[in-house]
Image 1 (cartoon, one colour):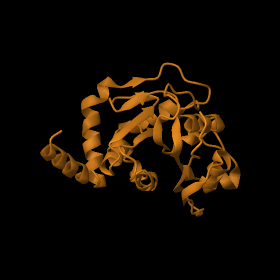
Image 2 (cartoon, rainbow, N blue to C red):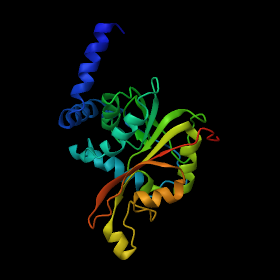
Image 3 (spheres, rainbow, N blue to C red):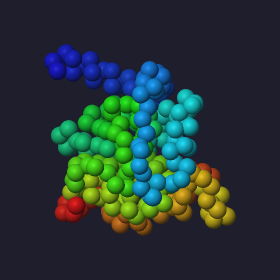
Length: 235
């Protein structure tokens, strides 16, 4: 890429930091590509029963493109964490659309891929996060945006995350804190496990926390937590 092309590319990515512009851009790209949508043929038992149906159904409305732009809770801290790594490799799990990926790119993480149970995009691989085909120590950061609630085996999912992240790399998780579940203990589909806060995730991951947003307000809130793996992270 020529210097002029790099400058133009940089300007374009700056525009994609504006949520409404990025959301509409990604919605338009989906309209042009949705006939190419493919789904994962075989899934592990870790995937909740209604996960695929729920997430594909969300694409019927434009609200799915950005999902309230909640991924900023995770991607801004990750962008800071990897800023001194040359061309950091980042994986976003469960993006549904390209919106999360273009937000990551606008924040300087150009070497980003998605992984989901379905895909219409060349930037999103099809796979199951409980058992991926990625080599050990493949990514500088693995970001799971509001995905862990769909797993019947969250501990297994976390171990796979640890396997594919590089030593010293970062794991990030988003979760909706649900006060109704705290009051009743009743899980409503598509949620399939009792994890209900960033603190709950931290109890499972058992790695140093470098960023935490977990206000514990008495209303549904989008929370996030980022961990750093040890430099001797084992495969």
